Amino acid sequence: MSTTSTLEAEPDTSMDHNDRTPSVRVIEFVGIVALAITGFIHLKDMSEKFAEVPYLGVGYGLIVIASIVSIVLLARGDRRGWMLGGAMSLATLIGYTLSRTTGLPTSTDDIGNWSETLAIWAGVAEVVMIVLSGVMLFGRRSPALSATTS
Image (cartoon, rainbow, N blue to C red; front, side, top):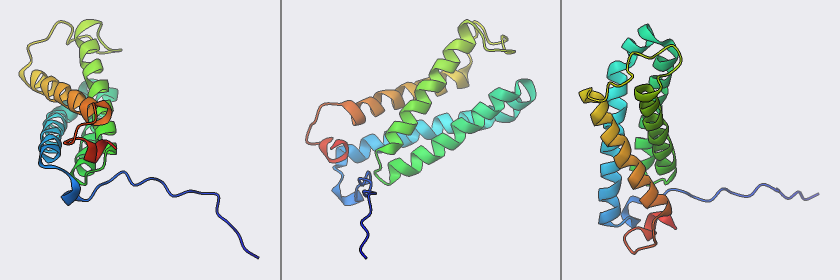
């Protein structure tokens, strides 16, 4: 009796390091640096957030974990790193904007506080990651990018 599997193999989303062009490697490196900055800044402030507003501490922990996972995926040439890193950066930037404008539940101390140095650096890193993720996932097919976006 023969059985056939209805499960199909998932497409390989990673690439051999040697198949990626130098320009793609540079873009990946910049993305990794942006994620490292975002993760480090949120790790640095995480214990303080747990003490002030516990759900923000949990959120900061998730940002750190997502940053690390995204870095590993990007280092392997896996486009899921762009998906996770870009989505996390977008969500983090939205949370930052809300915390400075309307405030967050049980956290209104940062309304109007746009000049915190570490928050500005994190925001810049997040914008860089959002832009690079968009380019790598949805950008025009060019010879430099086609190796990772096809």
